[in-house]
Length: 493
Image (cartoon, rainbow, N blue to C red; front, side, top):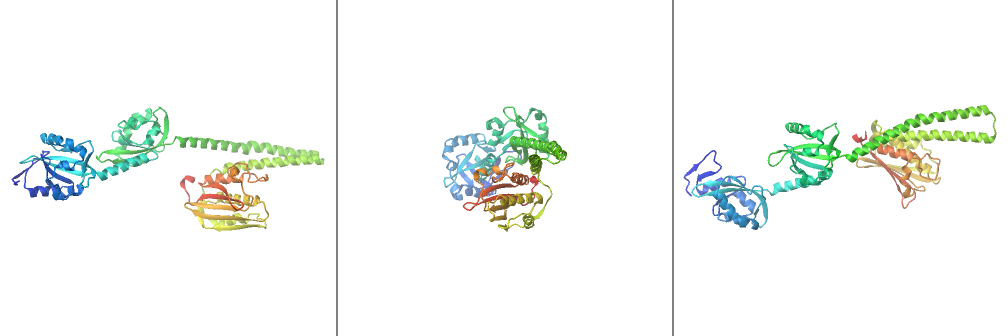
């Protein structure tokens, strides 16, 4: 073709061009995507380097090839008809808009593509076809979709008009809807009636100043289940722009019904415990003091008494004393459930030395230390109390005048792992949980209060740790394990 003229019309969607082959080849090669010029016989007249790379052909192989050769078998039958339709009314447009299109590479592999068509008017009718390999885009989109579906909490994507564009199964489960019931619906359907009226204004306000944020900070948010019941939720908002340059919002939603139920139960239990503490402190102590005073007055009034009367009065004194001790233990147990805020850097060697110096260690009992951690950041008194209780129990409940007790301390990730091992009689596995209950002891000895281990567990849990026991098989004895946070953590303060 001879280069005669280039007719440019600023408002025209197509090109009217008379040009030579070299110029047309140069023009097509300048395009940033795969491109080819095709005539009405579906024959490729020109192709750029990007198209050759996408399809795996040499440049010379594509020239003169029928475009049908680049189509998968399932698209070839109808392609001639579609070509005829296009040239009957040529206009700039995307090919197969709304449908998935594929091209066949030289290797036979099919790749997803997008094709743009732009007619060229000249000595003959031509079309400039641009081709984009969207494999990476689809992989990214599939990964995005899989990530949404794999999320352990509810996810929905909403456009600027508040229309739901995507949801995951966790969200469907939370609300009781199927995916089909939610897609392309207004998200207000998920809100209680009292919120629906002003939600549109809130949504517009968010889009004016989009940012990653939690929704309704400081307020109790509730959502509406399909059955009409409301449930508490936590909501996070993240703005993003989709591939069509549309403003979208990524909404993460967590059903916190179970957490709220547990918080309510915990609050009720704490309230009950506080009420009990008050009763134990005031309503029980006062009558005991009165009984104790009456006994003293009886002793004074009686003066010299018989051995039997003296014995019975002494028994009454003992029981009053035990009742007072029981009340003290209950109060200590109640207070143990509250975390101490005065954290500090603690020297583990010093803490354990302070505990062991005050222990009444029998002459035949050996205490071994293996301290491999120097410092932790926590409250001194609660940790010291736990260590003292465990070492005291190991000594008190040993079944021999000679024995060995070992305390070991190592770092395990963010925790300090303290173990207290003995070679005593051991604890049967069926009693592992029972011994941490209130007023339960580690042996048949009834002299203990049975509260030391229960207080130790409450202290450990209140400060973000835990405690357990195991047997030293095949050796004798038991090992108590304490895991205590090495660093101050916000949730434990």
